[in-house]
Each structure stands twice: as C-alpha cells, then as structure tokens.
Amino acid sequence: MGTGKSSAGLLTAQKLKLQFIDSDVQIENLIGSSISNIFKIQGEKKFRELEKKFIQSGHPQSGCVVSCGGGLPIPEGMVEILKSKGKVFSLHASVETILERTSKNNSRPLLQSENPMNEIKSLLREREPKYLLADQVISTDQRRTEQVADEIVRHYLNSIS
Picture (tube, one colour):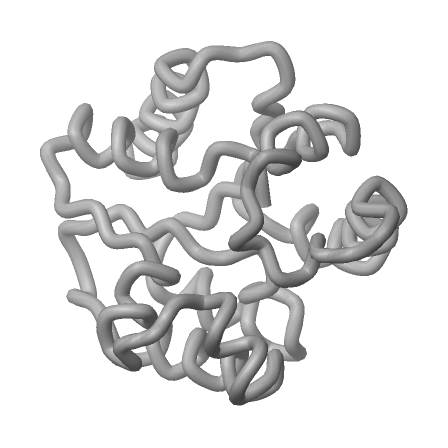
C-alpha cells in the first residue's frame, strides 16, 4: 500500500491501450461496501478470499492491467496464480515513503494503529519475500507516476518481444 499501484497501473494501461482494473474497487463494487467495512464486519480472512476469487475469475483473461492489493500475493500459491495470469510487477517504496503517502488516508484498515510506521515495517518484513518473487520489482521512491509507468511499459514490452 502506498507504492502507487493504482495510479501507475492506470497510466500503464493507458500507455499500452489496455483496460485498467483495480481489484479493491472491483471487490467494493461486488460486495457493495468499502474495503474498510469488509475488514471491520467480515474480517481480513473473508477479504483475502474475495481477492483470490477475483484473481481466479473476476476479470478478463487478457487485455488488461490489474492493480492488486498489497496482501493479495501473500497466501500460499497466490504468486503462482498471479504469474499464470500474466506478468507480475511489484512496486516497492521505503517505509518512510509509504508512511508519507498513506498518513492522511483513514481507509487503510491495516494502518489504523497507534504506530503506523511499526505496522508498515512489520507488513514489509512479512510480505517482502513474496513481493520479490514478482517478474519485476520497481522502486517508486522519489519517482513520478509517469516514470514508474514508463518503466513498467518498457519491462513489459521487453518481456513479450
């Protein structure tokens, strides 16, 4: 979270003339509730089930760029499922950058704590090994969205040629 997945994903899709799909938005539309409410009422486990279902059958098989939530690749087997669907890019940012980008957003259920920096550090420690399994890891620190999208496009086009 806070790495720029949605904004870079949208711009990448525009540059490649593909459909952009944000998994969180799709799940919110399907359930009729915000991610925060899904976490609060149904719990994180239910949300992760919804994410998996979305990846397995909730979007077109081709012609799209999908922005996935940061916890989606963590359950066992999810990285493999993602890779079976297409190229997987992991956007990376430092703890400080993530905190700066998310500090004014109260809709991040995993950061609603007394010490969000510690939560971010903990999440990254837990998740980073899975993130590093992506086809390409791209840093978004001190970079404009357009620079990140251009790098994704370049790596993507190189991988299919």
